[in-house]
Image (tube, rainbow, N blue to C red; front, side, top):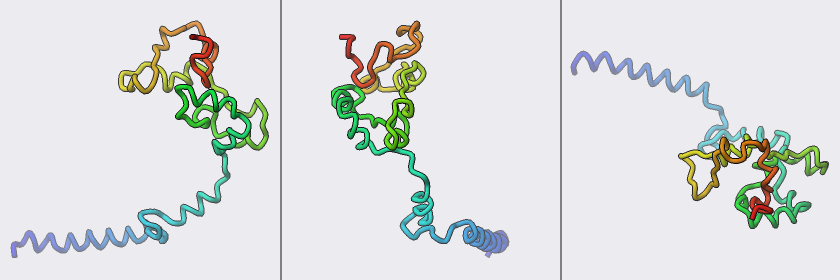
Length: 151
């Protein structure tokens, strides 16, 4: 056996041994109990306070808006995407405790012209040219029925 191999074998054994010792201390005991996951994470997640409303809760009070949006370009989006978590609003339905965005910056996150976005899926506008005098898109557009009043 060549002398290089004789020197490498102990190094590999030491490396593998160190790896196994470090792995023993770093991998939690519950890892692998339910597949390639840490089983204790289920209890930790279940113990967190809930902040997101169920979209079904929105339907309970806002079926008229959901009817409008079902025919609009935003029909595939959840209410929570624009209006935030919403659980506080569900528990105490006031108009002041739900997010009602409509600014150019907010709508522009999806709709500002970007060559990398598919134009056949997302309607895009150049915000620097499209009605620059208006601060809010909702001054002209109803996000639940975008072309209402503009046809």
